[in-house]
Length: 225
Image (cartoon, rainbow, N blue to C red; front, top):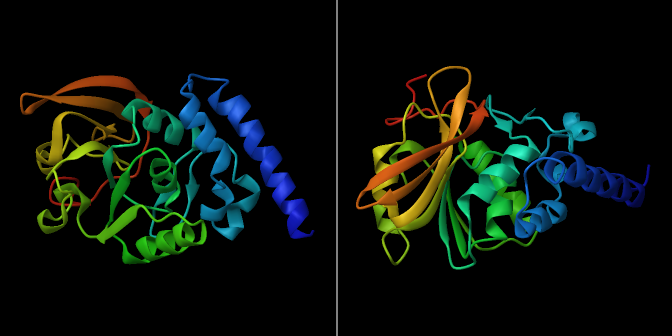
């Protein structure tokens, strides 16, 4: 099958995903819907799973990690309430798909990945797509972004955690700007709660959005294994 036919097939699948899995549920932010319609998820999916690129479920990538289902990507993005002047910290680069979505809605994205192989792969895909407002770091995401490379303000307006944590990591709360939002899966079981928290007077006020299931974030303020 020629590449043009492939492109058309993926475009149709992407539109079907948009109508069925996003608009057909509770994704209403027009900016999020626009970006989800533009970002080619097939570029981030391993070749063995290309036929499932737009199925509404997570898919394996490598290093025991997954690319999240489109609905969860859209939901977490919508809950961040991004504006174009936001500096965003993403914990868990993974395939780079969520990174790409964030990059289209924020001023700049700072993304941390513990596995260098995944970070390098994501960087290659984002370069190919012409996305240049992302900074990458390989390390323990539960400890936040390295202090010597923080944004000029010293804080992040928004933080997204794309792997399960037992509780909101304190270093991330410290790096969140006053009034800022952090979203991520919280819980120690196989099923977690997707939590959105706003920082007020140095503390966070949490709201549970729904149940979800993510791989664990390993690290000092995450899980040991």
